[in-house]
Structure formats: C-alpha cells, structure tokens
Image (tube, rainbow, N blue to C red; front, top):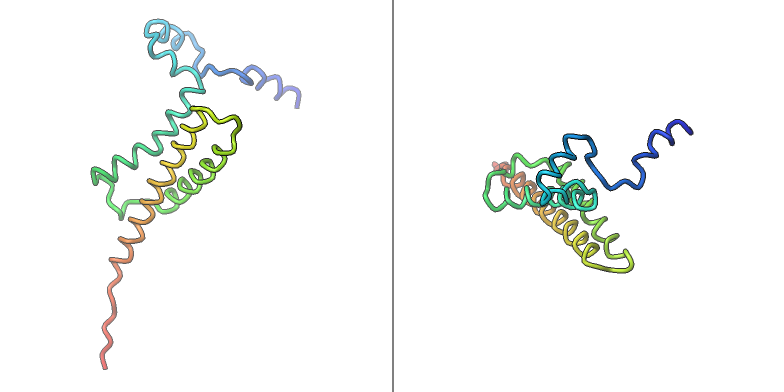
Length: 133
C-alpha cells in the first residue's frame, strides 16, 4: 500500500496536467494557452464539450433521432442533474460554483432533450394494427 501511495503522491495536489519537456516548451512559447495546462481550467472546458457538442448537433440537425444512444444520453442527463444539485450545495457560492451548476444544467437539459427526441422518433415508427371486424 505504501508503494502505491508513494507512486501516486507526486500527482496529489498537483494542478499541472502536462509537465513533460514538450508541453513545457509549448506553453512557454505560447503563454496565452498556458491556462490549459491547469486542471482547474481544463476540467470545466472538457465538461462544457459534453454539452456544446449535442447542442450544436440539435441545432444543426446533424444528429438524427434514430442515431441517439438513449443509454449514453440518460447517463449524461442523470450526471448533469446530480452535479447541478451538488453545485448548489457548495459553500461559499462564487462564480466558479455557479458556472459549474450552469455547465451541468446545460448537460442535463440537452441530453434530456435528446432522450425526448429519441422516444418521440420511436413512437412515430410504431405502425398501428388495423382492426378487421
């Protein structure tokens, strides 16, 4: 157990994502992009991508309802709902916690809408059986 703790200890409390020489020289060359090498900035950006991509697909119509994975959309909708609630419990509230709540609410809303689109499409595919009397 101590060996595992010693191995992971260098990563505990470290906010730097990439620390190799290539990343270091890249971020020294482009200092405006250096904020991407911090986990507190990179993590929310990655989480927003879970909301922005489906929103753009909904608005542009590139993702047809029959191609929506209901299981994936359900899990992301549930995750967004749960973390929106927990983001409201963080004390003290600041801009970061409000943006975290907004990000998760957007994720829950867009994936919830995708679930609605898929179920609406599935219902439209059901052909009623005519009753012959």
